[in-house]
Image 1 (tube, rainbow, N blue to C red):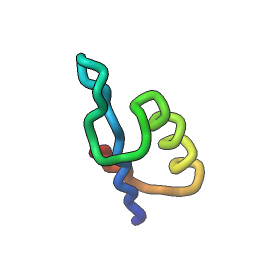
Image 2 (cartoon, rainbow, N blue to C red):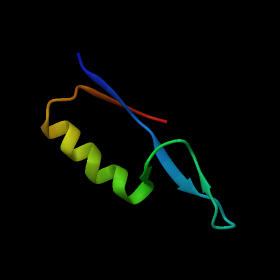
Image 3 (tube, rainbow, N blue to C red):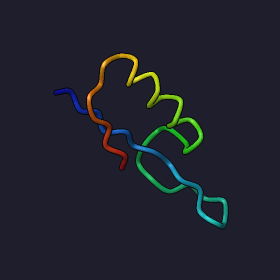
Image 4 (cartoon, rainbow, N blue to C red):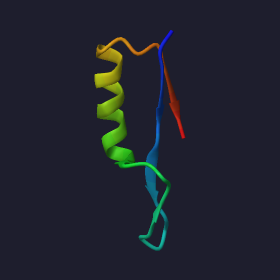
Length: 46
């Protein structure tokens, strides 16, 4: 089994960014599809 921890950045109501990742919420869905196609078994969103 291969797991990938997908760190994302969210946008706070004041416009500031929150998180330690490097993908914004709208980018993470597309990246998750690419991981699935590559054979990743489990994605942990943090």
